[in-house]
Image (tube, rainbow, N blue to C red; front, top):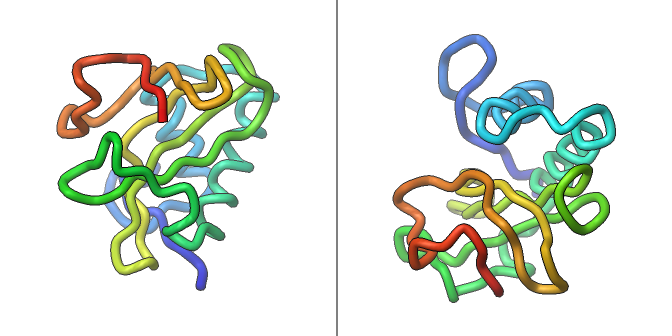
Length: 127
């Protein structure tokens, strides 16, 4: 079942985000990392829309009682790599709650996160 990503659209309204909306959202939150980074953000969009809402779900840093899933694309570290953290509702709608990148095999630096996502006041998390 395909998953929709809900959030701000480039038209100024909220709704189901297209790939272009998703890339614009990521740029607005963490800045433009360049051509390769944007391609990796597009890959992350596709991975989320095809995600089952279960695989990789983690309860270490839940958001509003929901397990957090993530997808990572590109090389580890700042620059081209991107990790996008999200929750799934009803397995058909995803909400983006954080964007960052890998700093270790299971650790991440969060460049942006929703204030409501409690990561113990840390920009670096390990799952």
